[in-house]
Image 1 (spheres, rainbow, N blue to C red):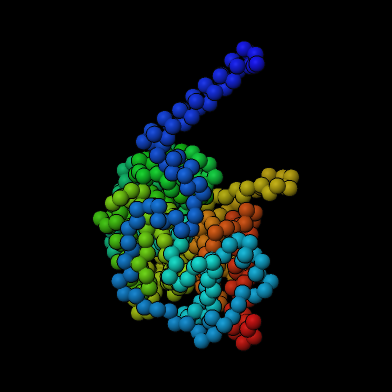
Image 2: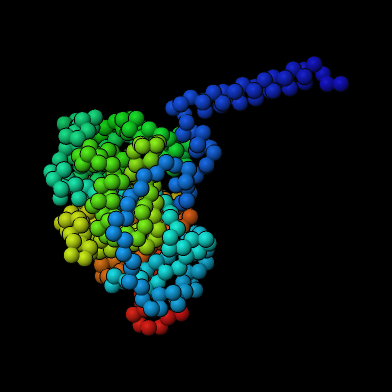
Amino acid sequence: MESSKKITIKRSLIAFAIVIVASAAVFLLIPSNYYVHRALLHMMPKIDQYTIFENRIVAAGDPQPWDIADDAFDRKIPQQFEADFEKYETVAFLVIQHNRIIFEEFREDYSPLSASNSFSMSKSIISLLVGCAIDDGYIKSVNQPVGDFLPQWTSFDGKILTIKDLLTMSAGVEWDESHNSLFSKTTEAYYGKDLWKLALTEKLIEKPGVRFNYQSGVSQILAFLLQKATGKSVSEYASEKIWTPIHAEQDALWSLDHKDGMEKAYCCFNSNARDFARIGQLVLNKGRWGLVQVVDSNYVKEATTPATWLKFTPKSEPDQTTPPQTGPCTFYGYQFWLVDYKGLHIPYMRGILGQYVFIIPELDAIIVRLGKQRDKEYKHEQEYTKDLEIWLDAGIEIINQTTSGNGN
């Protein structure tokens, strides 16, 4: 028979476990912790998760198909890249040159009609909408104070917070960007149901317009500002000013924090590879689509020019013995990333699971990659994960093959 001491220990452990389970249950039942329950249920974000959220339609009011090259479907991914395409679970790869599709491949069960989450590529769409709102007179300029629209964010230590500070990720607010933490603000924004309440926790803690610090909450403030300035939902304004004028072939879905709520504007614009490519083509065309100037060309130029007046300190590499030196921000504009790669100056949109739209003016080309994973290793000088080089090299190789006529 068990000794009384062992029985006592066993009962204590059982009681402790009951207390833990009960405490966890109570914690999850608290309304403010609703997002934790959803995060535990669904785990890390996935590209096809829009079905678990309420969504608002971004209407494609005048759909028109892309021009497609005769041999666009005859080519294959160059063999040297095949292993990496599989490793990172690529589901769509699209190359456009001279305003027509020259290569297109879909994997798994994805097709030209399959919707995928843009994740942070949607930040670039928000930026273009700010340009449209300036054209429409809703916003005076990027130098207008944020407090004119949202008095909750005014100044810090005498420095006024401007729209440009939001666009360039230099707002100086308090926001935990960690995607791997259950209790980060980014996780709460994704799985929660009150973005405005969460936005109000973004307190100014340092002078804006001084230091680059990537924060999804800053893009969400921009969206609230757009909504206030235009008097329209972000989705409605996106349909009117961008999605319809660029002749998107399908309605997009923008996920909301709750029914009839606010767009998760820092992420969660759901569309397909061909229509994502149109955003890239719009930027390549300097804001013009056909005969229509959709976004002012000067704004597009500013948006894709690095904010070098901002300070940036790279993260240390694992084998680095000396601290990294603070220098200028050379890789980010107005919610667009920028990379100098093999002599090419490339603005691009990107999402956390390896969603990319690359804009290559020197080649008059767009490369779109959608997938479920990206590399974990960063090249910190230009703040990109190293899989970026795979997609650029593969797309450029396809362009070179097309130009030379030597296909696979």
